[in-house]
Length: 259
Picture 1 (cartoon, rainbow, N blue to C red):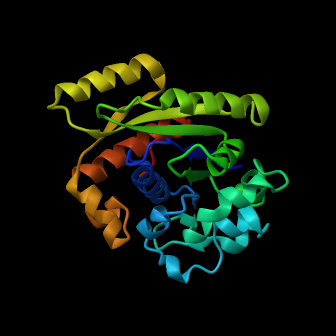
Picture 2 (tube, rainbow, N blue to C red):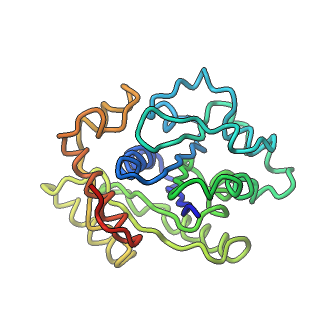
């Protein structure tokens, strides 16, 4: 049964989508069946995997609001072992529509239940908010991963995220656990970076990954070509960092290195 992991932080611009796309690609390239679920109305994960949002017939909006079976909305990507549940602007109105829906906090959980057996890992790219869509993701997940940028406001708002997680655990999903915390936009030359790293490690302790993702031009360029960075520039620092991160992620999940 596939492990479901939410990639979540209510702050925008911290590397959620970059992490979702590149971790999924690196995991898939190692032979693990991977589903990438885009539940951000911006749909950047969808376009970042080379899928034209205008061509989408069914999306995560349909599985959340219209009870469309997840299998009908899944799209096979051009990248090894990675499927996509795409999103487009239709999802922007879902928060309001979910407010009056039955089982409003668990609709994604039930939708993914029908396809979970077909994958080893299912990654949920959450919107930069703590609304009903993110709560759906946390209710559906086994664990959650938090990308944190190595910048001044890195920890701002994290207490709100942790409080939301505690509420979800108490009310809906008592088994929800922390997958890990990923440091992004890392620049070891800056004193500020080390200060943020120390503070994050003090807060999250052994849940912080040893791998940190650096600022990298190729990482920024790859989405405009609809490619994960490993398919855009395999030799770049960004690609190598996510490759290393994938190995650490798999090791923490009990998998030996695969070539």
